[in-house]
Length: 496
Image 1 (spheres, helix red, strand yellow):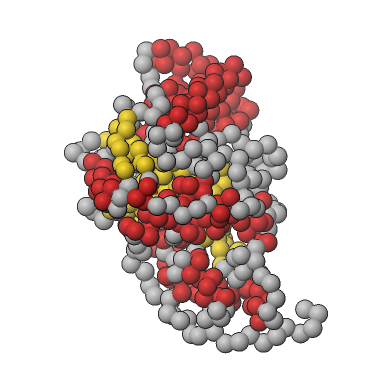
Image 2 (cartoon, one colour):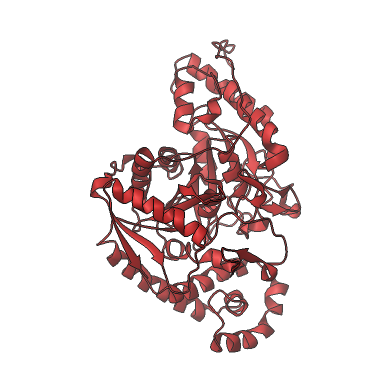
């Protein structure tokens, strides 16, 4: 068959099940595609093709004998390098962690148990702490639409691998937009689950071997279609929640369109395709109502900023945390004089927060969870931007030196990347990132479909309905991989 990698995961699984292609051939096609794009993109940074071929061959043999196989049987997959995978490096972008021995993270184990053929790891920023994916271990990953620009982070290698057809499914994570931002920048799909739906065990950070679930962080699926997100989430959560959600009818859909928020930044080059997307959604029958401030945006960022930096600060070396103590006084003074919720002062106060400080932020979060639940009595979902700008040029300077270039020669603070993603993260809501259009310069622009807590099936069903009516993933220009028709595999010797 011609270019099986152009199919989404469900399409590839159908080709496997109908024996149009074997698991070994599909794996070989994926590896060949990665070799063809690696020099330009550098998405897959570690691989174990020999072990993967053995696993694929075993799946082919099961299928030849007519035995039962899993939901992902024979599907080649890569995994974000913050998630542990047995037999592969687990560095999270740190040289010191590259050589450690790992066992499969919980979500990875679920995928492998359903027959996924896991063969590689995708690039991340150091400890998943950036919206650009580069580190001293593996270097920089580029955006397939423009290699001079970032693919996003921290699931950046994952998004680039999906966009280039290297993998049909990926498992990523999100605490600061790390699923949604790369999907947005590369034009693919991702789902940030309701907090707690998918186990975080085996994700680094926090430090390897941690048992406690990190606040705010989630593990979620990435793909090239909404139906693929539903499939992988059902596997990772080890239950039927996403798979059994009913189909959505756009003609009955009530959407709150959130593009206005005091203090939240949005480039006109991003706003225009989102507004055009909303118009197409309304023309398809949905009731689209512009809204403003579902919760108090500055209160939200205050609470989210402290909760987030508290999580990050827990993994800072003790000496670093101690050295920040003297800065609390100047930081408090700066906040009193008007420094914003995402300023250096707020970061210092978060890194050095007391339990009382954390409880106050948690109380604000709980109030916002109550308020947003009332909003969802009026709307089925909210649709909002993901980032204030489209994919931006690589910039490896210190964070406080970076700026985001917007239209009209304006620049935005780098940390404004946290604004639009904060609501779903702080309140533990599901948010499905989907392609919505492109800028005049041809860069992908996505939106996030946000739903009430536990309504993962709803946001995914809406995403699928939009994809089926309005279109979805568009691939960047890629080399074609041609695969010859599959031959029937030889049966394995008895006892193997």
